[in-house]
Length: 310
Image (cartoon, rainbow, N blue to C red; front, side, top):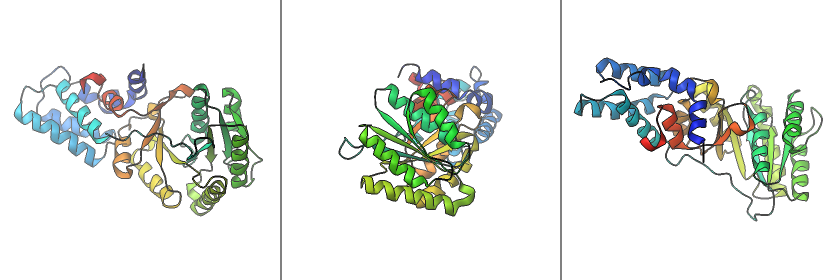
């Protein structure tokens, strides 16, 4: 996709220029043992996690032992190739309904503050812009501002919204949203659900009710159970995802706010731990900043390279 690498580079500036600044500063010089230690430290500071740092550093050190003329630019290429290899196969696609005619349902889950509601609207907008009729369902009926927030997004982006009053039964909203999507011949139904991990029992009960209601509408629904993770939280996201997956089996993840953090390396650790497909990443505030994940573009951007170099 034209401009995708640039979007990744722009979005990951704080990771590539900040946490990996020590590496990019070595691009034009021959490396020494102290530089290897510096690279390792900066990779840890970007929250890549033990396994990924180990794999990257083993590859760089092996080449350095063979070639003492190794420069920072060479190390960057090695690191990017290792990272791309770790993430090989991580790109995911959303699943469609079995008959291809009923609405394909996407339930977005996650804690408050992850960007879940905003992502719901951006996802619906992306489908609509692609000519695919989409309905949004405001199933986060607990949070006072959630309905208003998603309504404003829906109006701004021209996406149809089904909602109810605060405190309404979220499963009932999901049922009404599905009925509306079905009646209008929509291809996608995007449901924004409540994010309340601090009250785990109530949250999970509501999610289970939503799943049960949807399965009555379509035995294969929800077709996509997607967790939205705040990229700035780093490796803490792993425990969040595991908690949700236990009661609401996940089919993929969306990682948001990568533009606002120097910890963009956590994406690799989350994928290694969960093996959940990465569907989209959030690289900015605009609707078009929600982009399909591309592992090579991500790896190249992190190490300040062009995709053709890896």
